[in-house]
Image 1 (cartoon, one colour):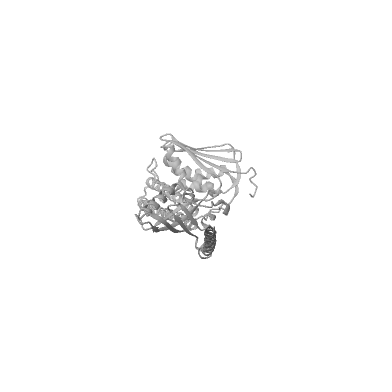
Image 2 (cartoon, rainbow, N blue to C red):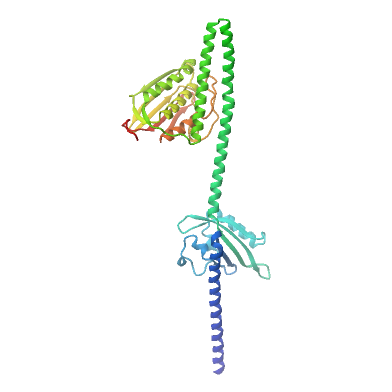
Length: 407
């Protein structure tokens, strides 16, 4: 009986010592977590983690899971490896598992990955995770693994912003290179022609060739109009790209703007014997930016003439639907596949301009300019086209009933 009492007393003492050791271990782990919060939180460090591989139990700093929005009561008493892997982004699951397996089988010196992990609200955070096996058994099987994890969501956000910025800079650089190329190529040709015709005019005057002189003057007028139009388009496009275009709303008579646009294109249309007709329901008056609308009108009309066959017709029509002005420019020219036109209208960049029916060259920025300008007025530009059946471009602009309104 005495022996049994002695054994019970020894067991009770051992139990007491084990409980004391467990209390100290818990206190040590708690202090370690507090130290990690103080020492690493500012760098995005979420603390260390430890994996008991045979028993599949993970100990970790609570920061790792609290950063995902989980509260203490959401964390199980015992956490296994799957508690974390089940929250991995579907696109990251296989690469993470492959990286871990390679390290567990001794194929890599460390487990090191970046992955997205799901937060409690369904969003994802980016983590950088690195660990190594710290103990193996006699046969080489891994027993324990330790690592450290960082929240790199901000870093990834900055990387994405930087990538977007680099892409934007490349785009702008390409645009500027194209702009310079257009200036060098498309302006050199008409200026060279003007120089040649001026020389011919000089000879015509000396030799009193009045009929030939008149013809050459008309050609110079035509070249000058095209060069002016080209320069104006390039300047307006450059202004729009720099974001320096201010929308200035004024009282507008749409009929007058159309008449001015037609007058500017009459010489070019006359050369191809193209008739320009207008169909205006009424002289609609509203407040908008006359420079923007005139520029769009001029470019669309110029394109219609450029791609029209000789002795054909270009029509400009205007209608009003509720609080919207609908302007349409229709030609009977070479047209294009509808899918190609949709692509041109969806791209915010230069495209390779096709030659016109008279061999006219273009910059490839006119349609892009129209799209940017109309969007400044909260409007939109669309079109319908078919090969050898012509094209109709529609411009839709929101307007107000009262043209005297200052808004």
